[in-house]
Image (tube, rainbow, N blue to C red):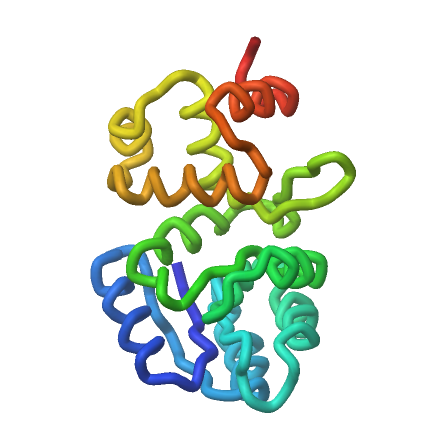
Length: 197
């Protein structure tokens, strides 16, 4: 799995490199520090995943996303940000981004964000009452298992992730979907055919 990181900050470089070293199947092929380099490296390397800083110099990232997608349509573009915002996540999803990840969560969630998006549809969102919410493929898996009555430990074992990661996914899912109890989560999963009634 080839990965391009487009970010000007050394802290982010080190965090992504640290995660990449733990994933033998990953190849961090290049680091771009501005929009022009990001486009050039994407065209040259045709990476599976592009991690792009929301504040990348040279161009608004919201406008850069479609250009990266046109350059290599199969690539999953994941936006890295220091700001948690469902509105921004939805806007980037509309422009073609496959995910929206907080930089402070890179160590905890980058593996799921990358491996959960590769091979998935770029627009892999769940519709709620006519609105689209950026629920990742991994969050869908966690949602389905939890709604099926699995405990956090069982979900972690099934998906090969830590219990803490499951708890993080669960909290994000319930916030994104505006669900406040397990019974509401189960009803949602049944309504959207993630589990059988």
